[in-house]
Length: 341
Image 1: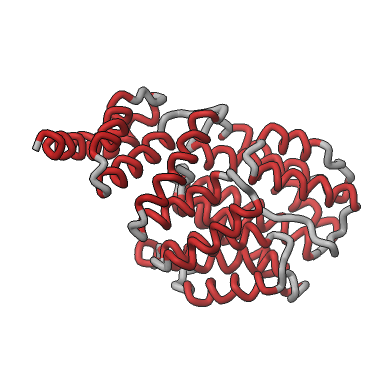
Image 2: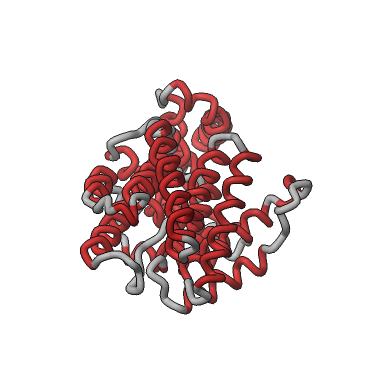
């Protein structure tokens, strides 16, 4: 599956150009198209689109920034680090170019916005990759630039979405990281900030909506989260970014008939994707076997149990699906008893 909390934090860092951006209409159009292609999981197309961005001296960080953003989204979607080296190369270049812009041009809301996003992207990946402390340090540095963005332009709603997302998720893990001086529990403030920003209809509206959806899911407000994810799915039909949210909300709400339909759509999408290392398939089948079992459809539950047990994932994934296999054995035995009884 798309790693829940990692993808939620992506709301901090992905961005779209706004009508007031300093870029040309052609650049704005390319950025919008590339972001849409990313949500549609057409990653090669998105990379090709962003490659067309001009490398004007004033905005040399744009191309590596969006390249890194696409690679990060791709890795989270596929639950893979296959593009890790290319990601770090791109994000480090974006940060280098952004720092140069600040030195030569002075404080500017757009430079701070992209530089903040770049640091946050790097931090997000580090957290996801197990380097939690360096990751939070980079994310915090990124948020500092986003706060500077709003000091320079108080109406910059896209930056507010990123700050609000960070406030919630850093607060969510406050008890584990309270010894860090810059980690505070500001979850309520974070939610309010995102909600206020979305009212302004920012160009990163769908990113903010997805972020708020996972926040509400984490707060166990499943009905509201479901509405947010469905709204996103209406804009991006078939997007796994929103399909996971819809399916998981329905599962938590014990609407097993409805969640089965969505998980089956997800399973088909996962199996037909260019990369399937086994993790997403195992996670999707785990939810399906549980849902079928709860409905008393034991033979169908058995099919997914057996599929999980027979799954041959990439070697680095085997340890991550150990619990999936254990649960498959447990449910298989229970289902066989039910059928036999």
